[in-house]
Length: 331
Ligand code: TYM
Image 1 (spheres, helix red, strand yellow):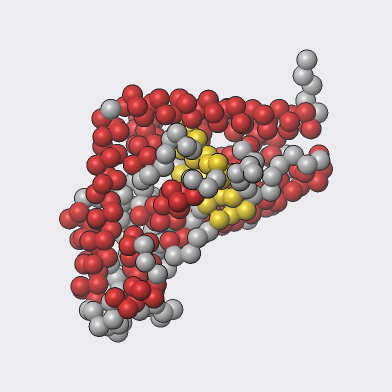
Image 2: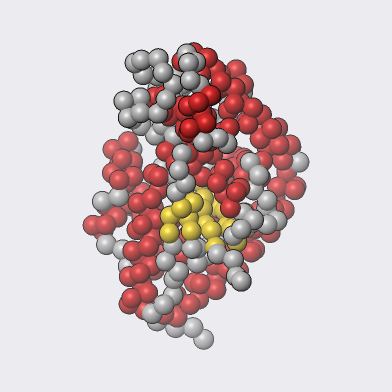
């Protein structure tokens, strides 16, 4: 039986956080043996916000190394850089004509980013989810494993796919978001009402980065906000502690019930130390492997070249079909 297809990507737009790991990359690792997987480095999405070119190039390679260090097998999966495959931009153009300005401007992330980057509300920012739809639809993905913040974008990709299929005949697989419990919405350690973000620069203790060393990780967890009371358990009135428990479960690989049992009677200070140590223990080997891959670049580059070829082949097939359906002439 043919395997179902998985597609996902991360932007090389900042330092990756434990939220990116918990909501996305960790799940990809678990899915790679069961599905045909495409994992991209979304550099075209990243430039919707101003990037320093040298920095973007560096982050792109770093992200590739990080994927592999986290356990993505570049021989089993197609691991590639989005801008290496021109079909993304080409399909995006066609899909633009199947997307209404109204629906694009209603996207929560567009509204948030427009507020945050009020001096640069460029067309790319608004077109961002259409490019994301092009990514997903090019590879006929059945499932898109993402964190909760990307659900709305995957739903738009579904709407665009159905609209195109309705008008031009069966062309695209209609994708489904795959949002796994627990790690899908890791919140800031300083403000549990907001997601932990790689672009957070105001409060250095809010986000734990995958590149943070052990002392930094422990310090950030030590300073994490908790709630009133002194019990370590889940609860709507305990957003800080619930977030820390989610992080613990994700990194320890245990259930919420097991975690609550483990910390029954334990004070907040010791609890936060245990969460920090668990996270630091998971990060250490990832950081070591990432450094090795970056030091021996040839291996990494060869994976990305092979990934580009495999991705371009699959993408070109879909794009040709789309071009035919919309009526582009070809000799
Ligand atoms: P990006 O780069 O913002 O985030 C990458 C992945 O990490 C998840 N994530 C989180 N999960 C849990 N808690 C958090 N605090 C947290 N922060 C981020 C995101 O949900 C995402 O899964 N547009 C996408 C990249 C993209 C893409 C695609 C994804 C481009 N093309 C096609 C899927 C399919 C983005 O900006 O993710």
